[in-house]
Image (cartoon, rainbow over all chains, first blue to last red; front, side, top):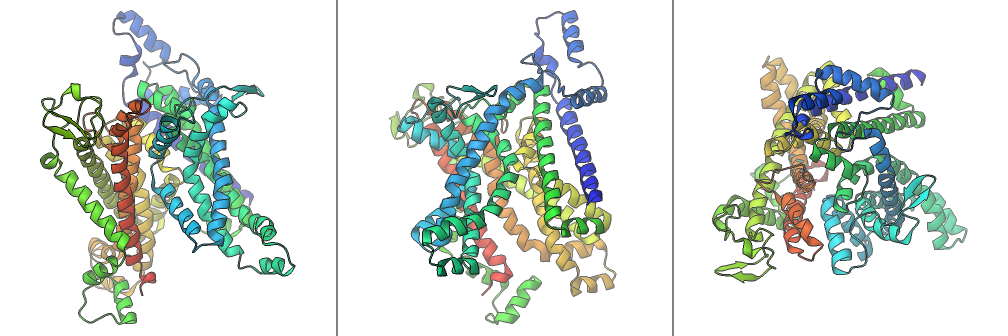
Amino acid sequence: MLAFTIRRFLQSVIVLFVMSVIVFLGIYAIGNPVDILINPEADIAEQEETIRRLGLDKPVWTQYFTFMTNALQGDLGGSFVHNEPALRIIMERLPATMELAIGAVGLAILIGIPAGMIAGLKPESIVGRGIMAGSILGFSLPTFWVGLMLIMLFSVMLGWLPASGRGDTVELFGIQVSFLTWDGLTHIFLPALNLALFKMSLVIRLSRAGTREVMLQDYIKFARAKGLSEVRVIRVHVLKNILIPVVTVLGLELGSVIAFAVVTETVFAWPGIGKLLIDSIGNLDRPLVVAYLLLTVTMFIIINFVVDILYSLLDPRVRLGDVKS
Amino acid sequence: MSRTEIIVEEKTGVVEGQTPWRRFASDFFENRLAIAGLGVFVLIALSAIFAPWITPQDPYDLMQIDILDGRLPPGSVSGEMIYFLGTDDQGRDMLSGIFYGLRTSLSVGAASTLIALFLGGGVGLIAAYFGGRVDTIIMRIADLQLSFPAILIALILVSILGQGVDKIIIALVGVQWAYYARTIRGTALVERRREYIEAATCLALSHRRIVFRHLLPNCTPPLIVVGTVQVAHAIALEATLSFLGIGIPITEPSLGLLIKNGFDYMLSGDYWISFYPGIALLVTIVSINLVGDQLRDVLNPRLQK
């Protein structure tokens, strides 16, 4: 077990190193920020001063080395455009994205599990088929298109919900949150729903398959034989048993929700890190782009590492197979 | 003719003299939804290919557009033109714009899928045939890439490569190749142990001949299925990137860019600039998926009756 953990950990570190080199070199090799950041009217001495200040005159590998040394100390460089440390800007925007992601996962569970259970209990009924057709659409429709349709329907035509921004926020443990004010709630609902649709389809599939399997088990027959009401059988015995796979998969998917938030945040002008990334790509604000990508990649590597370890705890075949190969 | 099909025919005693192609076609056309999907897709593809000849207006010829016709609602008449789907802010006919947009979207989707298919398929085939260290390295890279969501890989590649049609195609190939490598490797690992490969090896045929003339033809069915579905994914991903403003440049607008263009006007109620390109995108994706689903059922020997 220890050997397996150490090997996986080293692999994760290597992956992180490779990804950081790819991202850094790729982004720094293309485009010239000097042209964008320096006023063309400025005299040559002033231009050179700026280049030196931003460290753009050094060879690329020196820039990478400096960057990684600083990164390991929590300094991901300063944004060219905002004149602030990149990490601080990202951290300022991160709560908005996390709030949106958690809201989306919450909606996916609240709507997806009951819908999936209905579809699993009555697979041949019109409702069951309708839910499954809906989940297929949820898988195949592009997120941004659904977002546009939500805005068109609820904001433009019906005028019920606002189309952009975060609304009023309240400070909670030093973090600005939207979900505690009514105005904030109305602002978060549409983007969260938009971001939730893909995961919701996944939850529907999982809970439908789970329900169909669980319904055939002996303990369900026993519960019924005991004379429990059908509602209780479904709420307690079925629900508890399908929750395990659903929660596992959703935990895994939280990372990809944050990655997909890039699209939703742009559609709904939600001031999170996804919108920040798109704006920064447009501005050629390379330190911010690198910082965002590295943070997200690191997050994924950590999630994958934890999942690998958990799986090997649950199923020893995983780590034994790894030793052989 | 693939080996799996021979086995199936032996088992089911399919009518004598029926060619695999004909059997495949008759199986495919059993599903009405799939026929509809194929029909719609063919129509879309034709209108994209022949866009310059069938559209009432060339939306990128400044001589033909009149900025005074900007943001006219669907069905407006101006001079001799009838704008069935309205006009955008520059006064371009939306219907013509959509046909031209389909051209870009479909060609980017098809080109990236084909390149990824050859690249990923080739790499996967090599991994499966040679095995050992080559296999380990290639598959580790593929697994590594698949552990990140496609959109994140696309964002990394786009922020590295920048904008442009060629760059988007490269980014989409970079996202997709791993799926094909995985798929073909799985099939090829099974096929490699079959007797006909052994026979070919005993005949001392070259590696190249064995891989491309014997192994590859027997690994294509799953590749076709994955390829069809991936075209839809590629089109959706390209539209997403273009909508975010980091995809196709403004000179060759795809559907995603048309939608982005109209997004600013949507809040003021001029829905058609975004809405109709969106519908075109949706219909394209759904029709390809319908065809892909039916292909998967038809080409899967386990589901054969």
